[in-house]
Amino acid sequence: MSTAGSTRFEIPADVVARDVAGEIMILHLGKAVYFGLNDVGSRVWQLIEERGDLDAVCAAMAKEFDAPLEQIRGDVVALTTQLVQKGLLNVAA
Image 1 (cartoon, rainbow, N blue to C red):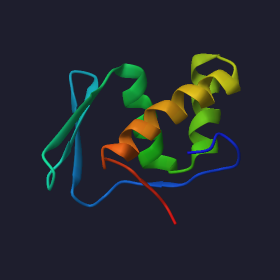
Image 2 (cartoon, rainbow, N blue to C red; image 1 turned 45 degrees about the horizontal axis):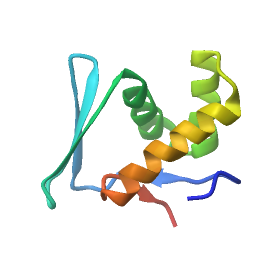
Image 3 (cartoon, rainbow, N blue to C red; image 1 turned 90 degrees about the horizontal axis):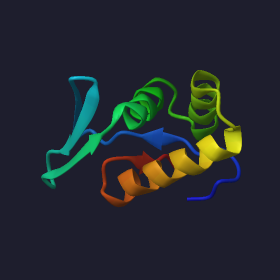
């Protein structure tokens, strides 16, 4: 996944996520793939659910965490790449 330009994400229909004590647990029902997110990763997931757009997620995270946008973008791209590889998130066509 490129760090340039905007990418839209979709959460597959057979992926469920639940908040457990402030952390989000994600499960792919069809593949039995499980993934846990810490509080920062959980916020990224929430923003993906709300906005779906990489640029919008990164901008919100940079504002909320008062961190440089490029640093946030690198971290968000790393996380979303993992989620895509595990089938827990799709890049929208």
